[in-house]
Length: 182
Image (tube, rainbow, N blue to C red; front, side, top):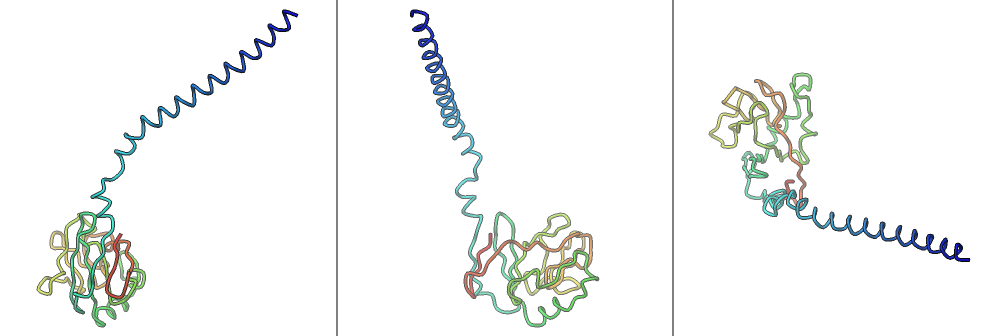
């Protein structure tokens, strides 16, 4: 009978020992998660950076044929209120003549508004063409004087060393006169 009680005690001890090992492991995992949280949280973007992740832009002060530059994520964004002539010029381009083949329709949400990141895709310069007095290049869009890249009225590279079109950032129309970039 003593042997039988000893066996019960061993089974009971193993069960208790298993439970204690699981409990210790669980507390250790919780402690590690609590200790790691500040480190992982420090890797998240700061609030001021997140605030710049999206911007709203009022379009009502941009007359037809004019442009506006806003800053988004530390980069200039060109917003152009295109004229019917600029739209027609952009839509009538033969795709085979383009270096980076994109239709105008792929680059705009509404034909009269073109929104692009104003950074030349060659070496990161800021092209000219936002002011009426600027050189707009051979295709009526933008001209990067650093190395001679010419962009058309859709922001597509047409001549020069730039390998890609001006980037179209993510944006959406909030109303007829307001967009949200980012």
